[in-house]
Amino acid sequence: MVQVQNTLEARSGRKILVNTFKEIGLLLISVFLFALSFPSAISDWGFFPFGFVAILPLFPVIHRSGWLKTCLYGIFYGWVAYGVFNYWLTTFHPLAVVIVPAIYAFYFLLVFPLLKLADKLFPNKGYLVQLFIWMGYEYLRTRGFLGYPYGILGYSQYTFIPFIQIAEITGVWGVTALVVFPSIYLGNGLRTGISGLKPWLQQNRLPGIVYCGLFVLNLVFGVITMNLDYGVPDKDGNSDTPQWKVALIQHNADTWKGGFRAYQSNVDTLVRLSSEAIEEATDLDAVVWSETSVVPGIDWHTRYRTDQDRYQLVKGLTDYLSEQSVPFIFGNDDGQAIVDGNGHPILDDQGSLQRVDYNAVIHFDYGEIQGTYRKIHMVPFTEYFPYKDIFPHFYSLMVAKDFHFWEHGTEYTVFDVRGVKISTPICFEDVFGDMSREFVRRGADVIVNLTNDSWSGAVSAEMQHAAMAVFRAVENRRSLVRGANSGLTCTILPTGQITAYAEPFTETYMIGSVPVYNDRTTLYTFWGEIFGMIFLYGAIVLLLAGIIINIILLARKKKI
Image (tube, rainbow, N blue to C red; front, side, top):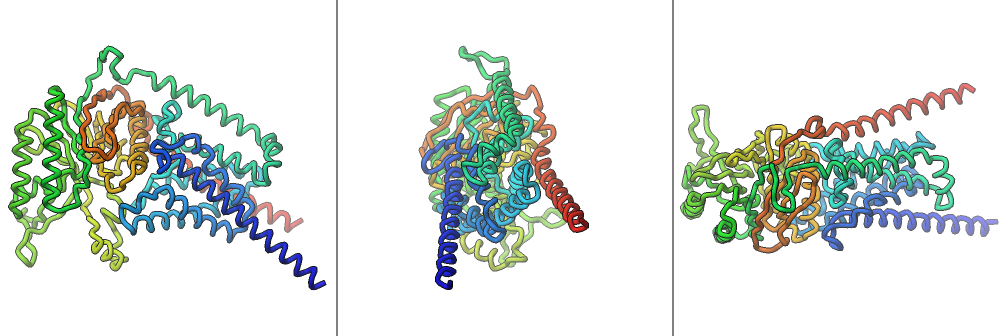
């Protein structure tokens, strides 16, 4: 009898172990489908169809697992998925590749149990609630200090141009919902295995039919809207809409590395490439350099001259710019003196001027700075850390690791560049839809993103960034130009089509034109992230309703 019991226990243990390996295997399949949906080490442009099934394997696992396992699997999935997807963070900083996956391990520690809760509360239609939960999570993780939109599945469709046109109404959220629903729907159909899929689909065919109808309608809407007149010249080069012709200078260097000699060398390269571009195209409307392409602060060193070498570099540069007949737009470290109540600069204990620094963009024309935009949304941990009083040791560690912290800008600046109104989100500011929307609401006709992605050493990192920029053009129906120090330097139409780009990680310049289209304001520009909020609050309401209904039903059963 004891032997029989031991045999049964051994078989049970092996079964549990086998099931666990199967479940981990399904999670890993999801990890790689998710990563490959986007630009990756395998494909610079990504395989967008994978996005529609990327998270499908998660739902059978969540359904079959107990609560503890579900939590552990959430931690595992979040860590591995973002470790693989954002593998290029290893070249940014050793801490980054630990911090980001750890954050997502925590997120999925919460999301997986919520998905399971929906499965338990709504045995027949839980997948509809799971859609709201997933979408609410996607929206919520873009907010606040830790906001990080990389990996939102809607962005995987950036090359599927007709499909993403709905973003002018819903932002990326409508696209994302259409992408993730097949995974959630079919994943629930496979909860009991392949044999259970057919009867499950027959019982739940109406939502599937509705989805197919919405998919087709979305494509029809996309084909119609992308063929409207956005001021793009015809095949003969004719258009009633003004065209903005720019030279985008890609000097292929991380300007922060190397000290003063590197700063001088980078400026020399920028000047040389700009001169070549101006000579090639004499009718340019602007020249665009990348984020912090010039490190020594032009305004600071012109005013105070606290460092003669840097002053001479700045003077040589401004002399060159003053001689040009075309305006320049470029990134610069904007240092400003801290002043007292009377406007007098404050000195520190050593008698040096106290200053604050902004990651900024300068509009230089007619021999002087015409305007400055100071970056509003900082990169968490590397540019800004609001918890230094709570975690002083962690803050000290980041400072010791040479992290560069900036002050926040406050104004959504719109530059008037000889009659063309532009705004210049810096670095990953263009991955947040509400930021570009606010620039457009304040009058921007063209969005010009200046960025430095050279640190990644990976084309996939640059392409993941550019994929999100595509949506900013569609959402607001504005042309978008990207000036990057190593890529992806490109021009994007209001339809989201990338019309031209420079080869990544090459020292070059690119001349391109985009229409100055401002004929209409989109619904997304009008109401912003409302669809993301609908999904978030909808998830909360549905879960609360499910809990209340189940409590009432349980109470009735007890009475009986």
